[in-house]
Length: 195
Image (spheres, rainbow, N blue to C red):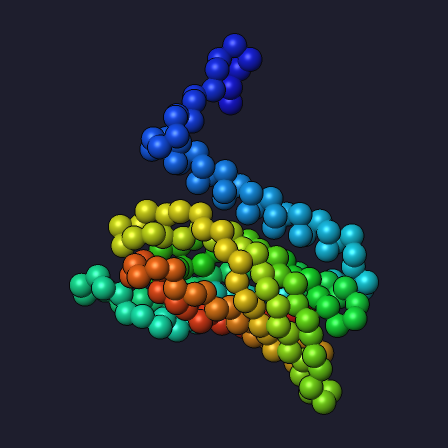
C-alpha cells in the first residue's frame, strides 16, 4: 500500500528490466480483466439456471519430450476445481472454471478461465461442445519451481451425458516457440455434476 505522501516506484525507462517487468504485468492484468468481463457479460445473458461441476485434476499428452536430462513430463495431474455452466439459448453455453492442480513438472499451480461453447445433441445419448476459452494459468516455468502467470486463449471441447451428470473437457495448448518449456499438450479432465 502506498500513502499519499509516498510516491510509487517508477517502472523505469523503456528498454530496462523494470520497464519490461511492468509491461508484462500490465499484459497479465489485461487478460484477467478480459476473463472477468466475459463472466459479467455471460451472467447477465443467462437463459436458464446454471449447472455446477467438480473436477479432480486431469490427464495430459505432451507432443514433445522435455530436453532436461533425467526429467519427464507429468501426465497425471492431481487437483481440485469447480466449473459453472450457463445455457445462453440457441445451443450456446458459457462456462467458468477455476481450481488448483499439479502442472507438467509436478509443481502446484492454479487456473481461472471462461469459455464460450456451441453445443450439439447426439441422438438423445450425449451432447458435445466446441468453443474457445480465455484462461489465466499460474504454473511453473522451469524445473526449479519458479512460477509465472500465463494468459492464454485456447480451443476447448467437451462431451457430456445427456443428463449432464458426467462428462469430459478437452483443451489443446499449442507449443510456443522451440523451447522445451512450452510443449504442445492435449489436456482432458472428467467433470461430475453436483446440482
